[in-house]
View 1 (cartoon, rainbow, N blue to C red):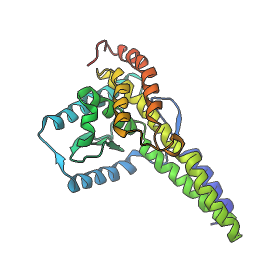
View 2: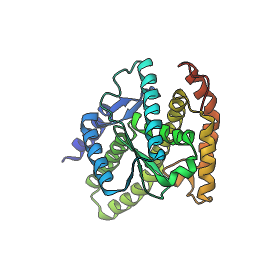
View 3: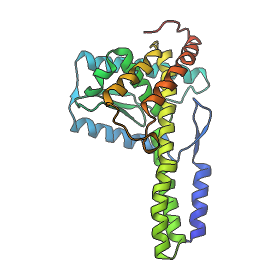
Length: 270
């Protein structure tokens, strides 16, 4: 492909591949429609469940589902009240507890969520689970998975464009090394951290609307910090904000989340 045409295509994709985040009102980079990315995510989720031990029929598994349903309902209430009544029509919420000692939980596009048993001692109770659930649901609501894929496409596209434009092999090698480090540390990692911060804030809001105490979010991250034993890379080299950054953010946002919840008649929190 001619290098000028290639660059024009990249610019065009960046212009047309935008979608508004209803929670922030900001345009986000997203090349993927729900009907293109959700079926793939659902299939991958089903395959994961087949290959891993799903915990079923226990009180913990039931709590995961109960909390997930409350959080999803709260999100729908907020979206409907703010002019997005059909936003969740393609979502197929599912919540599973999987036997794994990793301290982790995750959500795929379209609302497919997994909690590992290893995170339950950190959560401690239903409200702690709601903190994590709100964060994971927020990733799905904000299309973070599709945004990361879109950003990765742009990152790869610019790399290809650079290799097309630079004829000299030595200069091309220097470009590839510099661009690989620069685009990762300077763009992709901050992009990922911004998603985590956004999911923290959205999650705090919807957990409060669901009736869970947002003050407990900072407490959970204090336990996360203690569990990590201080073993974490510098924030600028990480996909996630530091524990201290998250604790400070969540502490300052909790009163705002309670204020938002009061708009929906929620004045006491579990």
